Length: 133
Image 1 (spheres, helix red, strand yellow):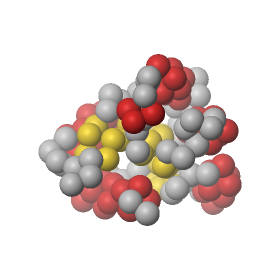
Image 2 (cartoon, helix red, strand yellow):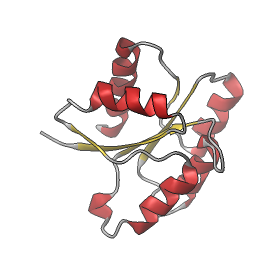
Image 3 (tube, one colour):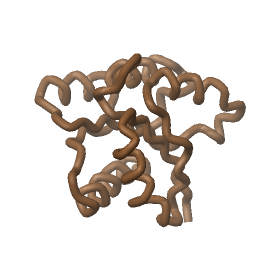
């Protein structure tokens, strides 16, 4: 079984807690420490020594302080070491402009934050499909 390393970048502690409670029991996922914004993610990634330790999937909240999802995505895709990591954006509200901009920057998907556990499970399954292509 392939283990998928996942990082959630989300400034809302309740959303982080919900995410981890829904996915911590999935044996094929390794949930890496959550980050509260893009700046924390960049520092975390830059401090990882080996490329084998890099995440396979980065889930970015769009609305975060310091460095939002779109800005973080642009950084990742412009950096040779991180450009091939599947990065997705999720947001409370994803309008067509956000979707178009993020897809142009290289987002694998742009999704609206689910409100139910079933919605989170479906969203994660969709994200994981991108990693396994």
